[in-house]
Length: 133
Image 1 (tube, rainbow, N blue to C red):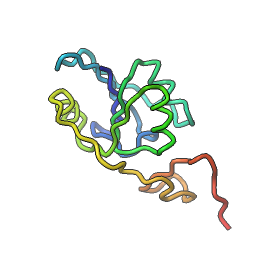
Image 2: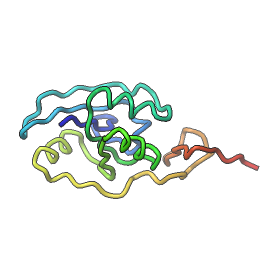
Image 3: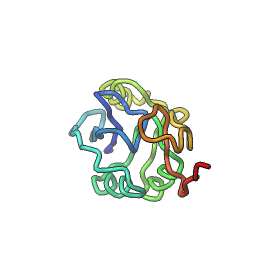
């Protein structure tokens, strides 16, 4: 099983598409076969599902992602596990033990839309933009 974890400073990033990099870990029979850090190649619609699919990733672990992103990964047969936080090494450990549990996405669709990129909330495009009056 190959897993991609959205990563920011050795912790799971709350924002899947905007994380600086991904930790890609291959796990088989309770052992880590490989672990690599891959720079996030960019947050364009449908690009990351294709990019991670080509890397043979079967599961994404993140704090949160938009519904559209989840649907695109699902189309590629990639499972998404959101609501995850904490150090990446702890998450990998729980994954190996089978004790990792997802929760509600840590980013809410549409929160903070239109306020620019320097903000704490997510802004996942849902296919259209609102004009400010």
